[in-house]
Length: 329
Image 1: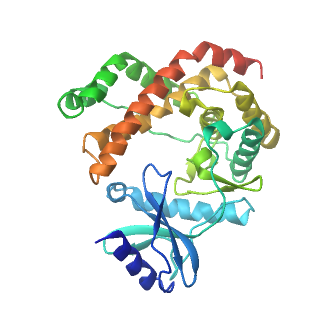
Image 2: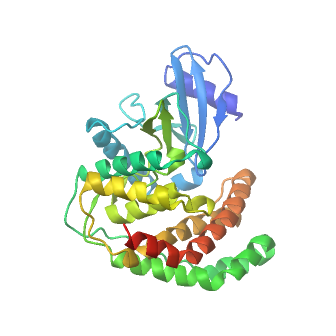
């Protein structure tokens, strides 16, 4: 079914009135597909959920839990954009496609060169506010990462030779980084709270200097210090292989001011920065057509795999400088 036909079916099924202009694909999504539609009833964002992701046994329970936590954040006054409940449910299903509908909001995510310390400070305080909603002194059991990198390399040799070459060049780092990540998970303080799961800069829109958090389907219970460290690194620029230490300090200082004192060891947390390896494994599965819907997604998987290899190598290279800066905070 063509895209236009899909959306004609969607608006008819949800009684949103007829489309008044063609659907427009919104850039930025790396897993699902987002479109803007305009109808007689208003403007909406429609997120078409990745069919491969939805085949996972835990997909529906995870999304249902995220929907419940989305409402908790909304009720606590956090600046979030929740999915619309239609016919008594948020997640919709039509002709084999799961999707969400949101009211369209004007605003835009910042480009990397636009992110300043003040944005990082705002993001750090927002994350702390989420983490404070429901804190419990109990461990958050997180599954260890046990990727068989040699198997991916072997398969990539014939199917994605360039990717195989890049993987081989960092093969030892993939295993040592995975070990460091798993060790850091085991050493996290025993605290559990609501975590956003994906609050990097692409999922925060800005309206006249005010933030709006979007893409909340990764909401879950997790460890606050793990997420705090991952997002501080992300907002500071590790995603583009350049850490702005002023931005890093702004994020962490603002988080600590809002959350309260964080009794964590930076040396023990350092391995959490290798959480990029989870994203790398997922994209290798797409690149190698292990978990992939179509050729477009395969190309995205290959591109993201290469970018993520660069990030992992960069993060490893700045260990000493990063830890030295963190000790000064």
